[in-house]
Image (cartoon, rainbow over all chains, first blue to last red):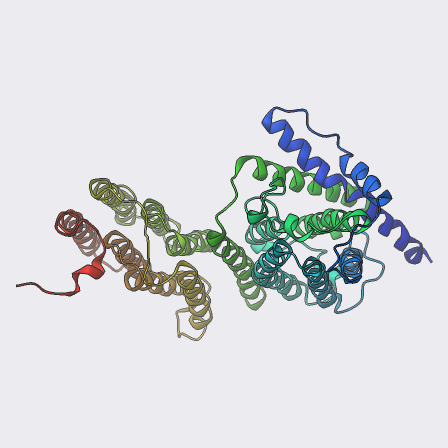
Length: 302
Length: 213
């Protein structure tokens, strides 16, 4: 009975806590720049405001835009629910859910790109093309990282895979997964979330034609994705699954905040990379995960 | 003891990939220098006792590979007034991937080699193979003379790592001779770089394929 009761609690936690992270990042950026910055809960206000607005669709767009935005959001939330939260296993986990996790992320990306193409503008297409071409490299890195966990724990269920720490390859995995986190969430140095120059945007270019509730779904989805990758990274490094409930959850929350502050610092201190330099950085991230896999393989063999 | 050594060699392997991925010549020189220093420390971490010979080899290697050679190369670079590799013959991502594939291949292949039991668990042999291949990749894939020197240095580091297996058996005079040769070679290359720069206004060795008179 208790696991069943936990599902809605966890779902609510994912949905309610996710918009905090962009708020923290903005606060860190403002603090580094010496400004006061928007309030911590700004994203919640934005979401509430967008939800009440009506949808303005281009004449060319079909209802596919709304469907695409909705499916992308739902797929992301489903992937998030599959992740265990520190010592508490995900209630819907089963053997092989790691594969479903990867495919749900891909499904979400597919529909987000589809919704971006829907309105027929050049910028939407350009953003979608960039998003998908970066994803080719970052997805391989995620798969290599998940393979490392699978090899170490001898299981393909996220609950068992993420419970112990990544062992000797943890440093490599931390570097690789953090880079992937920045790329997947369209953060500096891959994309600048503040820019409004359409030629250089990725995520923002994709959601240019979204308005009202679909825009809210895209915004909230981006926040959930950020939380999802932070939780994944935190559990990859620390053996959170082996701790007691209270300590494990507190450590998880602390680690997520540390990662978010790290993203904010990277964003304040680095400049966006030139587009032709991005594949090199993503390949490096993939190689870091691959060498973690190699370390795990040597570790289990000897 | 052995795990510290493996960590050191792992870091040296990271320097390989750093050198393969860097588009700026100073960072490539720095990667080769860091690798030389790391490998210079390695004899001190081997399982046998540290005698004065081993300590001398380590000190000499760190001095020459970590300080003297990078200084000479950076000086040649300043004189030639360039710091960027514009068009490598082999792109950065392909060379990075090839280097990573070589590293993984070397680790996998080392299991099949008939090594002594005390060397089987260490990364010395695979590390030597991977460093050799990375050095070759730099030699083949880069157009600028200075990057080719870095490839040559990586190649030498690989051979040095192989020599680590025999460190107690090799006379000091051999190690000293190798280090002296290396320094002279880099010294000569520094002069050649200057000459190429004056004759062709560039360090691109692809321009040196046709003979005149």
